[in-house]
Amino acid sequence: MNVETFMSKRGEAPSRFIEKVKGAVGEENISQSECDLISYSLDYWLYGVFLSQYGKLPSLPSVVISPKNSQEIQSILKYANEYKVHITPFGAGSGVLGGAIPIEGDAVLNLQRMNKFISLDETSLVAEFEGGIIGANLERELNHRGYSMGSIPQSLHCSTLGGWISTRAVGQFSTKYGKIEDMVLGMEVVLPDGNLLNIKPVPRRSTGPSLKELFLGGEGTLGIVTKAVVSVHPLPERTIKQSFAFPSVEVALDVVRKILRGDAKPAVVRIFDEPETARYFGQIKNKVTIIFISEGETDFVELEGRLIKRIAEENGGETTGEKLVDIWLEKRFDIGLGPIIMQQGGIVDTIEVVSLFKDAANLYNDMVSAMRAMEGAISVSGHYSHFYREGACLYITFAGFPKDPSRYYKDTWTAAMEATLKNNGSISHHHGIGFWRKDFMQEELGPHGVELLQKIKLALDPNGILNKGKLIDGK
Ligand SMILES: Cc1cc2nc3c(=O)[nH]c(=O)nc-3n(C[C@H](O)[C@H](O)[C@H](O)COP(=O)(O)OP(=O)(O)OC[C@H]3O[C@@H](n4cnc5c(N)ncnc54)[C@H](O)[C@@H]3O)c2cc1C
Image 1 (cartoon, rainbow, N blue to C red):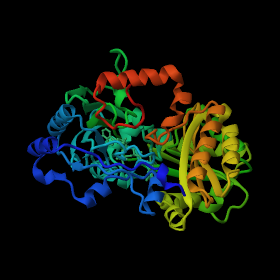
Image 2: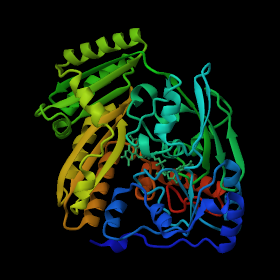
Image 3: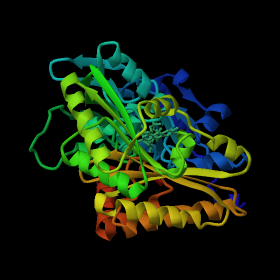
């Protein structure tokens, strides 16, 4: 294993910077203990986790700073510009592309103290939170008041609202409630120069290009999301769970396409390929399954349930009942065998991409066959989830015990990205770019697209202090 390809550096925040920041946030909210530096040097980029098992740690920051409000962050960023200190924002570190690893960061900005519920407006159906609140706590605040945001990622318990916004995350109930970019109405952002930007919450506006879009997917490179106003929904009155088996991914995709064409909006739609069907629902062999959850007002839900059943059965679907949905609901936060495989020296990771319906089946076939052809591959499986009327997200999980892990990992990713681009897909649906996927941005956006992002970065952050080495670098 060539661990030397992994970065290895220790951040250098000058002592004068640290003294000034201590004055702003209090000595107790600054840590230079080896334990904290190590804890904040890793996110959930699985190859980084794999290497850390062999004692190969990512680069360490020289300090972890934990502010409690926007004003403190404004001071920190002003000092960072003065002393040219590179700052890596850190939500909960559940990102899977290395976005929160301080690869070129001198200081980590830990946002977890900014974790408050601020308000709920039951008339307008919006709620405001601080950016560092953990998803499960956000949902708890809403649920006991009778509401939900409807954003339930698998990482609900270990990711933050600010992290969701910064990576353009998606929850498992997205086909009804949308992706995070559909849910955020307004935001407060500390800009790289320390100034405060307030984007007021309104449903839609016509005031030039949307400033929100700079920070949705900004991955901590263009500002720190300190507060957000999001849409909420009353807790559902009625839920219907259904599942069906089909002979192929292609047929299953066509069934979902037909259901969504009629403007149905089931909260959960997931197509599991044969290997994932066998893994989740052992009793169903050689089939592809789809699970559906419809939820909301009783009349709508019952109508939608009937529409789904009719279209599924008309297209050869074999009813497999509510039980499969319950099995999925029970397992949906499990992370499976990944950690065990890695402890045994194997490599595991996931890749999510997105395409139009017309390309979806070819994308699945090309991606899976290219990834299975890699030396050492033991498993490649997938599901389609997060559906739109126009297309869907394909989510592939792969595992291998290769002779050369570093080469296997890179080659597998490259094969997956090439298959996606060949099928007119986009290289990420919701995990973002971080530093690992950066190399594919030229092909994704084209040279002018990358150049435009670089110019925006340079204009907002001329000293390049925020999250250096991620997503896009200014020039
Ligand atoms: C088990 C598991 C399941 C997952 N399931 C899903 C899923 O269902 N859907 C999904 O979309 N993703 C999923 N992910 C990926 C991950 O949870 C998301 O990317 C999430 O949005 C990251 O949030 P975080 O708070 O942990 O951010 P971090 O990992 O801490 O940071 C992610 C990026 O955002 C930046 N950042 C964080 N907070 C802020 C802020 N307030 N302001 C500016 N920049 C900030 C960081 O610098 C970094 O670039 C999963 C990850 C794991 C480990």
